[in-house]
Length: 147
Image (cartoon, rainbow, N blue to C red; front, side):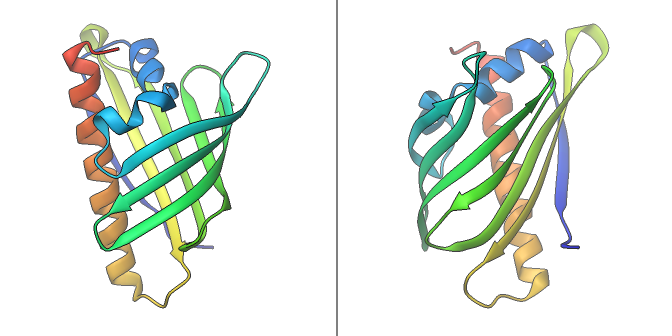
């Protein structure tokens, strides 16, 4: 089984407000550094994204990928790679837990396998950078009250 990388942060907002930002793929280019385009390709019966195409630009790595999303209740979303130019696999999730005083603990877990050879240690470091940037961007976006 592949190793994964995870990290958590506390956001001063209710879980529903955090999940609303996570689920709003059209706004990803506004708050994530790497996502330049996001297009929802398919939704479920509740209107939540089931498949999303993302155009990524992380400096040396540029990719056009499609991810399949699974929503578990209102506090967890996970995704797997459908297709990509650069990646062999990508599995991730956000898990939201209510915290004190209306806050939310957000845990982001990620496992990435690239098509080019890469040492495991370097891959884990890259995953950590991706996670830390995503959590910081999410926290800033939610706490700013931007919709």
